[in-house]
Length: 237
View 1 (tube, helix red, strand yellow):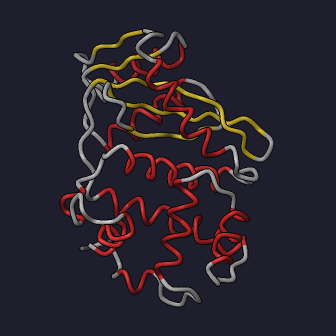
View 2: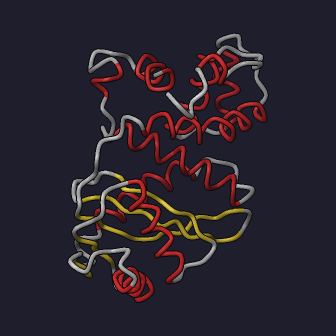
C-alpha cells in the first residue's frame, strides 16, 4: 500500500526478531507494566534486553503501528462526549482532550500544554479529520469548550445543525473512560517530554481501541485468530 514500507523493511537492522519488538511494544501499551517489568519478563524467557531498548521501540514504532491499524478502523457514532483531563509531563500538568461516542467508542485525543479555546478547537479539528462530523457534542460546563464549538460553527468548520449539549450526567461516560488511560499511565516512570507523552498516549489509545473492538478484525484473521496473529496481519497488510 502506498505510504507503507514492507513489514520486513520496518524492522530491518534490529538486533531482535520482529515478534519480540511487537510483543514488547504491544504489552507495554496494553498492560500496567513498566519498562523494567518487561525486561524481567523477557529475561525469564532467555531474552536479554535493556529497558532503554524497549523505550526506544515504543517511541519509534507506536506512531507507525497506529497508522497501520487505522486502515481497519470502524467509524464511530455521531453523538460525542467530549472532556479534558490532566496528565503530568516532566513535572508539569498538561491537558488531555478526549471524546467517546455514546457507545463508549474512542473518537480521538489531543494533548495540549494549555486548557483554552484554541486547545479545544485543535482537538475538534483533529477528531473531525480522523472521523465523521458529529451530530451532537456533549460537554461539561467549562466555558472555553462551549466557545470553541461556537467558533467552529461561525467559521463553517462545524455545521450549524450540530447539537451542543451540556450534561454532567451524560459526560460520566467520558470521565470513566479517562480513568482507563490514566490507570495505564500510572506505572510509567514519568513522561519526560511533551513529544514522548503524545506518542505514548497515542499508543495507549490504540491498545484501548483494539480492546473495544473498534477495528475490522474479520479482515485480520477473524475471531479465531490469536492476538499475535491479528497484530501480524494488521502490520503486514
